[in-house]
Amino acid sequence: MSAVPNPSHAFDPAQAALAALSRAGLRAAEEARRTNTYMVIEEDGQVLHESPQEYLRKRSEQPVPSSTQTSA
Image (tube, rainbow, N blue to C red; front, side, top):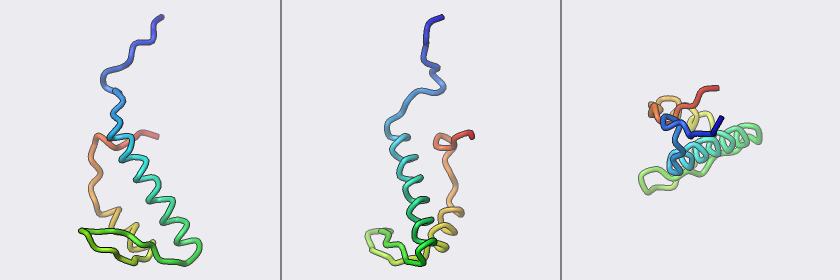
């Protein structure tokens, strides 16, 4: 059997980078929540200090593009 890449699961470096940034944001929010500190984020060119709970709430309200969803 030869290993032929499945075209429906083609590697997209941009999508991989977005997924990595998303995971990093979740880890940062969890760390901020655990240590009871605020997160420093950039939004629309402004630097904001935001609670991790607010960050996660805003994040959960954003629709996730189907191309970045992963199955567990």
